[in-house]
Length: 312
Image (cartoon, rainbow, N blue to C red; front, side, top):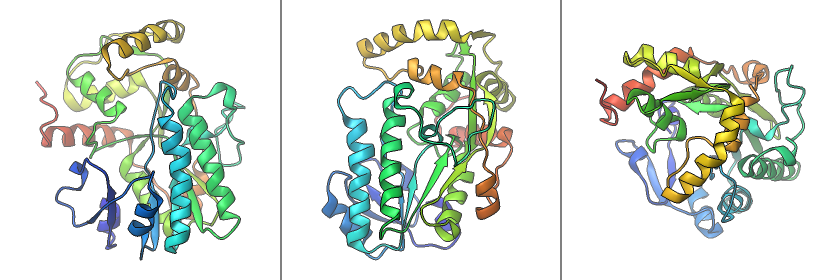
């Protein structure tokens, strides 16, 4: 939204309950639900672009089916609503995790097939299925583009996200140990700029990977320390031990009704050490990324400004 507003676009935001991210922004608010096609059609009326970001992220399976309903059924409803409303273009937010990680010695790009369903979690499977639905619709009458960010971090993390909670826990010295492994991390502002470029110049039916910088969790903790002055955890748990401990962490989370920071799915993801290739987005969309240290510094600056973090 902020990127669209900065570029002079009028913005209509679909809301359910939480509107904290919209406070102070000059946007039109419309109540709608992924489960209600008629509400989506009404919300999309008169829109040139529809950015579909709504999804349910899970690192612990889909025990109640809500991940499938949000990511697959919800996307099908969005596709149908875009058709009925006559919106010009759909920009569908997917994830790098829908693509196969093999061969691991080569960076992942848009030519990779879908990830093997036997080795990925519910979130990855449902996002891959919804992505396939969008691509199929794009071969017919729907003008759609798909963007595939990696691990998104950065300011304006209102919830906060799992990674936002990770950075808060680091600053509050609540992480006695880190887990070995890493991922590709990208600034939310760079993803937003890339998404607007995809709406403007992306080719119909194409996917664009929005990567950033590969970094281990230990490296993120070092950058967090640089930003806050608080020393990172001294210990790094090896992957084999994290895999063994993950089921216990999942049981504890279910018992306490807390959302776990790590599970078997998340340990597997960071253990893959995925590298990505964003050359297609760079060449076709002029996609650019900022230094990772700037992202971490700005994230802590925003947390502090919003009184969500009290650094000592």
